[in-house]
Length: 145
Image (cartoon, rainbow, N blue to C red; front, side, top):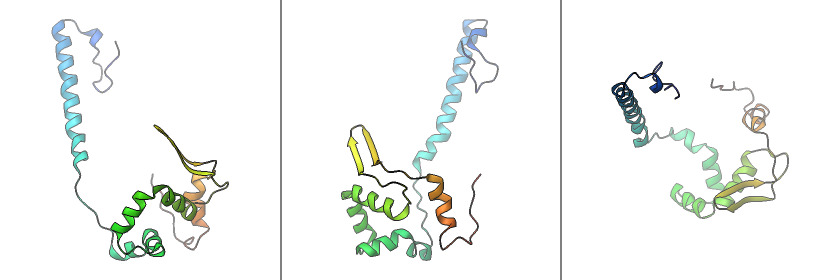
């Protein structure tokens, strides 16, 4: 039998009695319960972190919202939900560089979805190079290790 990687050195096949097997299984169950208890708290997050007002007002989302003529964020969200293919097509054209255009924004054949079919883009270019060549090129990039 395989070793239990997160209980170093404990292997069921090395148990000397059925009592040892029971103890090992109990330890495994206890460890799983503790892990679940720690991670289940993460699923219950209810806090909302608001962006600073000036940052929100000058964001790409607000700029796009104003260009489209939406009066409220709720109005925009309702439109985006009803027109998600058009929304994501506009976002991709506006906020990403494409080396080859796509022929279809979405091909949906449940359970499979293909976005931007036929299009080619370079993620590194869009995350780094695109910004290094833009108006904010003198800012230091933020690199998360």
